[in-house]
Amino acid sequence: MGDNPTNPPGQYPSTRLRRLRRFDWSRRLVREHRLSIDDLIWPAFVVDGDNRREPVESMPGVDRRSSDLLVDAVGEAKDLGIPVVAIFPAIDPAKKTPDGDEAVNADNLVCQTVRAIKQVHGEGIGVLCDVALDPYTTTGQDGLVRDGYVVNDDTLGVLCRQAVAQAQAGCDVIAPSDMMDGRIGAIRRALDEAGFERVLIMSYAAKYASGFYGPFRDAVGSKSDLGSGDKRTYQMDPANTDEAMREVALDVAEGADMVMVKPGMPYLDIVRRVKHTFALPTYAYQVSGEYAMLRAAADRGWLDGEATMLESLLAFKRAGADGILTYFAIEAAKLLGSGNMGRGT
Image (cartoon, rainbow, N blue to C red; front, side, top):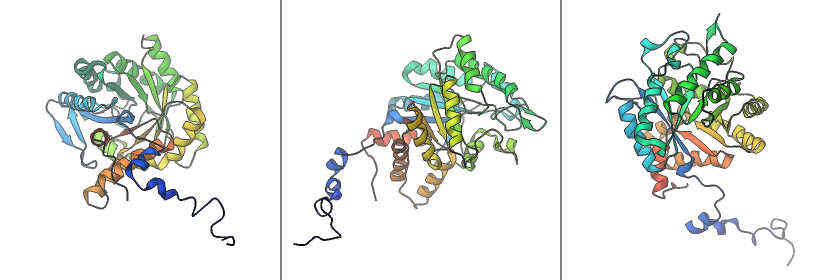
């Protein structure tokens, strides 16, 4: 029998990759990447008051909760096995100032909430706190504004005080999201000098000036403060990848224990490069706009919500992420705990 040019030796029909896909057990046997509850960080919004729960209109299924209700919700996350909850505040607008003074108040909403969580749940779940000024400023900017420009070095001192206040309240992971130059080194020194050398830093190392943040700004109440302004003088240009490597390298040299890429799915190439280059704990933030798109499509019946949610989270693992901050964390943990990994198409 002569050679068939369409079937060269060693390939089809002797090599049939579909053989490994035939059964559920065989697919599981050769699966290259796995998503687990251990990979999930749950971002949660806290608001002033008692027994208060408000839906975030642009993020269906996500609520702002007062501290008392959030403590209970964190208990559910802990029982599901979620390792970390990330706290983001929606503070009373009356407490906002041009310089975001409430951020360094040791009794502010975030610090009160961290203390309440730790009092009830102790070391059973980690608490991550965002370090940036945008929830607290009347400008909606992450730093101090002088003559229309977000200044770098003056902002660092405020961020250090904010980080120390959060550590004093019991925060386990300080997560600077401000993108000021030099802030990781400054915060590390401030924490160490205050006796918090064991507190971790997860740096928002490659945070882009993205259009996917809109629903988050609704949730924390900074959208109207920012108005027509933007954050392009300090957050990264979405066109750049090499610059992300320089940002990560600087943060690692300054003492970051873990790094994050934000947003998530539109920047999986950055996640891959960061993990491959630095080989240190690398995280991705599936941001509010990503969540809102998937949720809205699922609510309208355009997508299978469970399947696309889990598929999107698995994509982060495939790109090299060690974990994901996701508003789907509670829902995903329930499915993963039940052994339901969703349906393929």
